[in-house]
Image (cartoon, rainbow, N blue to C red; front, side, top):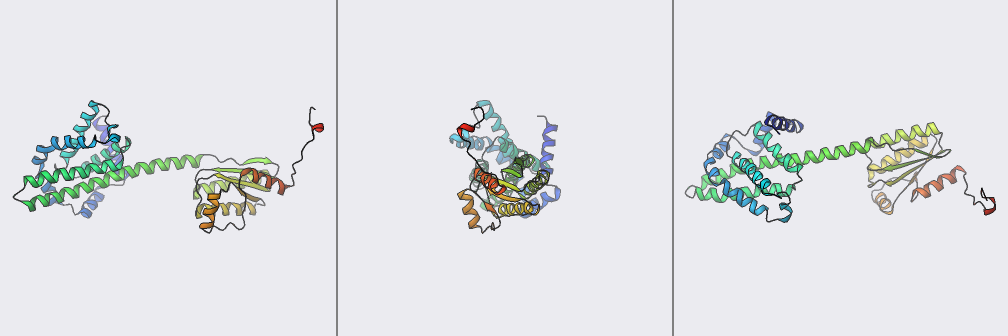
Amino acid sequence: MDAHTLHNDHLSLLESLNIDGQEILNRKDFLQFDDTDEARLTGINEIAARYADEVIEEFYKHLLSFEDMRAFFNDTKTLQRVKKAQKRYFMRLTEGNYDAEYIENRLHIGAVHERISLPIKSYLGMYNYYLRAVAVRLFDAYKSEPQRALDVFLSLTKLTFLDMGLAIETYIASRERTIGAQQDAIKELSTPVLPFRPGILILPIVGLIDSFRANQLTEQLLLAIRQNRAKIVVLDITGVPYVDSRVASHLVQTVEAARLMGAKAIVSGVSPEIALTMVSIGADLGRVETVGDMQSGIERAEQLSGYQMVRISKDNRPGE
């Protein structure tokens, strides 16, 4: 990846998180991070440079003492490359100019760690380690000026919390994109309305139900009722993993819409867990006929439609 590509990646992260110049100022104001803090941090750049290698080595010694962390650094070249990048990150804390470019860089670093699936607890733990490591050396360097050491440390803490907020946002944004893509994929999956017998339809529902998908399912069902002149519909929710008051309300609305089209709806696949949930949330299912599984739903639909199961005697079987 070249510098130009990297820079564009940063910009896209800023834009995707709606972070502009004013937002950066707002975040600094909220943390009470100002020019005085910047001056304090640039004032210890020489101290940071003196101890950077030492801090980084200690940090990775600590990190690699955990088995689950060693999986991210499985060869010497990777470890050395990461150490160099970590040193640049560490030194940047005391170089000033905490502007859009700085924010872009921090967002990119957070996104990289998220992409390799580094746990956020470990990523945030890095900040804790840095603060402790710097505090020890800072107060040692300013033994005769403890107030100055404290002021600088507080400024570093503010900047660290700014970085932490950005890192967490990259993790959250990535999770939201993943969840959004999964939800879109589910919404795009066609839920087939299956003609079972003349006048009987089956609608197997799989996946989560939200307002958009509920409307989509209802529209598909009503269209199928009209096209097939259906009188009975079996709505099977065996594949719905979670039912709350909102989902129950969607089901009731779908059943009512089918009734207005002249079709009776039967809800099948009501597990004991779902039944208990519906009772506990006070879902109003008084007008909805429910059965335990799809087979029971089909049998009930056939019964209501006048179909009757008749055993064919051996003598009357075709071909015998």
